[in-house]
Amino acid sequence: MEPETETPTDALPDATPMEELTTSVEGLFAQGRVFLEGLLRPWNAYQVAIVLGLVLVAWFLTRVFGPRIRAWMASREGWPTWRMRILVIVHRRLFLIFFVVLVWTMVLVMREVTWPSRSYLLSVVAELATAWLFVAVVARLIRSPVLRSLVRYGAWIYVTIAILNLREEVGAILDSVGFNLGGIRLSLLGVLQAVLIVALLIMAARFLTRTTTARIERNEDLSPSMRVLVVKFMQVLLYGAAIYIGLRASGVDLTGLAVLSGAIGVGLGFGLQKVVSNLVSGVIILLDKSIKPGDVISLGDTFGWIQTLGARYASVVTRDGKEYLIPNEDLITNQVVNWSHTDEFVRLDIHFGTSYGDDPHLVRRIAIEAAMKVDRVLTVDRKPVCHITGFGDSSVDYILRFWIRDPTGGLTNIRGNVFLALWDAFQENGISIPFPQREVRMLGDKPTPGV
Image (cartoon, rainbow, N blue to C red):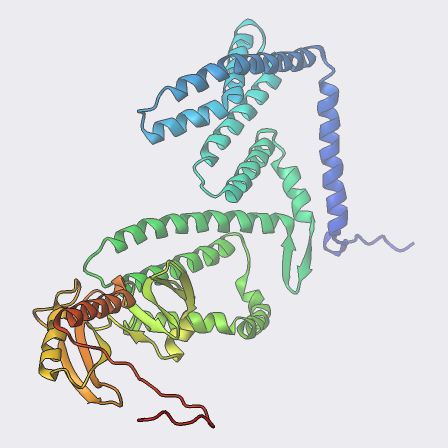
């Protein structure tokens, strides 16, 4: 007989992911079955009954003291906002607070009067309730409702698994659910870890961005456009670093995704061409300082002032309260009139005509005096002027030019006020504003004698 040859362990086939998943699930169910069987023991059953009784007591205390605490809170009108928020959080978690106090009190009493093993289940329930209460209170610090719900439920699941010592079993189940993508193994556990780490880093980056942005906006040494540029650059840097560090920390090999990311990048490049163009245009606008927050601009039929400069668009508010979101690319490629680019002075022109019987020297002087009496018209540095522009068919044509330094106050209203001042001044001095007169005759009519 030939001697038996030993098969090396390396030659044994590896367990498939499905087999690993089946083994992990069977082990988890086995532990659950053992736990349920243990509940049938006398002292474990007593502890379960005690927990149910404490739940009823906590519910009764909440029903009794809840309305009284709410009425007392309503009478505290002069308290600071932060103190009232703490009271609201306590009032909403009143049942859980009562239960935590009662169950820990029962655990301490049980440890004093009997063996510690006879209060093991109560200790586990007390730890779970305390962890859930802590997570619920801390999650209230997150402003976003969606993010707050995700953090709260995710943290509840994690602390429950950790306190029950099921991290290895649950981790094995999550790790066995996945697939291979080239040389990369993508599992549910890895995805959850990556999402968690990236989310935490993005929250930290968001906090740093808000804190730094507030300080930058208070810095008067920087121009408004430079402030926006620094804030946008800082946001891109912090969020990009958060995503990159989070993926690296979660074990994702970014070099293995080079080909895939290149293909995705080409597709996104064609699909997001306009978005990228607006981003680049926004950076150019901030660098050359052609447009900055507070400037009064005209673009086509839109006239207003720049309220904010975003990464993709500029917010322009008009006099009628409408807010136009103009893409940054339009501000680069189209003709834009910036009324306050280099200075805040704006010149306005008004055209009018008077009768040939009126003295043009008197008309010019009256027009200038009338314009100088209107509010917002400059009368010192840049005085109004009036010139004759031509001799028309029915009138002598003039142009009245005056300056203002607050275009955000509107242009149509100041023109209307100047026209009204001219009308009143001409009426007082007997100057007439002619209008074209035409004589219409019907063919075949007899001519009027003497005409």
